[in-house]
Every structure is written in C-alpha cells, then in structure tokens.
Image (tube, rainbow, N blue to C red):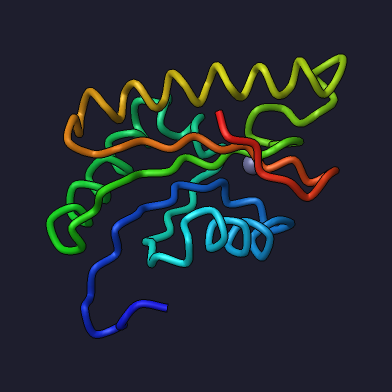
Length: 137
Ligand SMILES: [Zn+2]
C-alpha cells in the first residue's frame, strides 16, 4: 500500500455500477493494478456510458478533474459479462460472441478516451464472473 498522504492515484477505473460484482471488481483491480491506488467511477455499462454522448461528457469531466488533482497515468475501463445495460447475456448466442462484443465496445470507448486525453494510457478489461476472471483486451 502506498502512502495515503501522498494523495496521488495513478489510475482511474471506470466500472459498471452492477451491485452483484463490486467486491470482485475492486479485488481484481487491486491485483491487476499492482495495489497502486486508483479512483473508482461507476456508470451503467462502463464502456456503454463512455460511448453514450450524454454520460461521456460527465465521465470525461470527472476524469479531467482527477487528472489535475491526482496525477492520473492510466484510465481502465471495466466491462463485465451479463451486463444489464447492454441487455445481458441473453442477447448473445454464446460467451465467445459476448466477449467479442465487449472487446469491440471497449476498443471504441478506449479510442474516445485517447482522443480526449492523449497523454493518458488506457486499459481495457472484461470481468467474466462465471470464471471469476479478468480478461485483458
Ligand atoms: Zn453492467
């Protein structure tokens, strides 16, 4: 754990709000980010909220503030399997299609982030609760 007084969070995680997975999201992000501190923003659908014009403005405004006060180096977007904001797993014929769909959406959202914040690295993750595993895109 880094010194809490340093008041620096080198990462921002933008995750889905889904209450079922918050503990897992935080535990996996801690591990994935090497226990470095991160600011944590939740919006329905994560990548979907970045792709949507209205919520994107709010998210980018929050990121812009955090970059200034916490010296952000990387923004991670965390989608998950069976996301209600995207219609859930039922809309896909199999898990492979569902994962590929999220890869596409995350890539699009990541490109928008890079366009707005060219100096910030972008990380793209999918949480597959069926295997309790994070997939890196
Ligand atoms: Zn979700």
